[in-house]
Amino acid sequence: MSYVARICIYPIKSLDGVEVRQARVLQSGALECDRQFAIFDEQGKYVNAKRYAKIHLLRSKFDLENNIVTLKIQGSDTEESFNLESERPRLEAWLSEFFGFTLKLRKNLITGFPDDTVSPGPTIVSTATLKEVASWYSDLTEDDIRRRMRTTIEIDGVPAFWEDKLFSKSDSVINLKIGNLHFVGVNPCQRCIVPTRDAVTAQVNSDFQRIFINKRRETLPEWVNKSRFNHYYKLTVNTRLASKEFGNKVIKIGDELIL
Image (cartoon, rainbow, N blue to C red; front, side, top):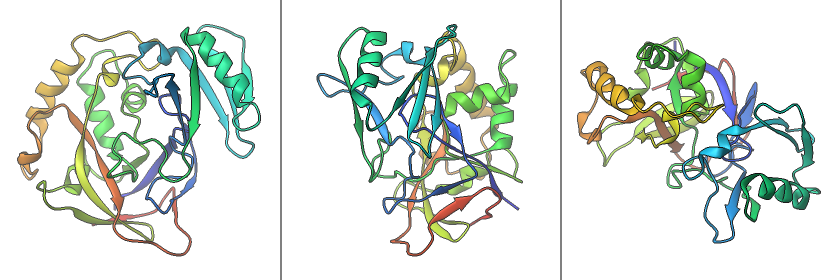
């Protein structure tokens, strides 16, 4: 039986995640609080890990109930806490000093700030997949890969790459149910430069992508729709709500995932 083993949300895009026992699903299909905030420069462009490796050096802890973020720079013992609403200007000043240029923190309560704006639902991967990918590298652990891939829903009780069942050819979707909620699996997620870096130190593994592509090609299950792989630097699955859902829209640890 495939079931939800972990739920991790990332309240500020590109900063550390926080594991939760359950998450409310918004009308858009996004998980509440996930990528709810994002950092922008004066030109309105994301200040994220794709564009600024330095962001990996920020450690963050979140008190979701009280809307507090606590930040410190990797290697430092000094922490600063901020209320994400009432102290946003002070937080923006702290972050601007860290990056060396003026920035703003923006909020989106509807979809958050996902990379895939068409399919803003949970991203899905299996625990077995993370273990398998970690085995491709002599110096990385399962948790290292977990932090690099930044997926919101992790499932267990299934073999590696089981989540590849959640997409088909480009003009179709796969229906799935998580708990009492109906989603569709849309596409495998194309990875960017971020997984090539250590999520804590920002150190780059120059061989990461090459090894990943070769091993992903070798281990791709025979039943996978290969038309979705114009290249093999893809892992995890993007989803969206199948239809407008009513009632208690919550995903919990232990919820069964059914195709």
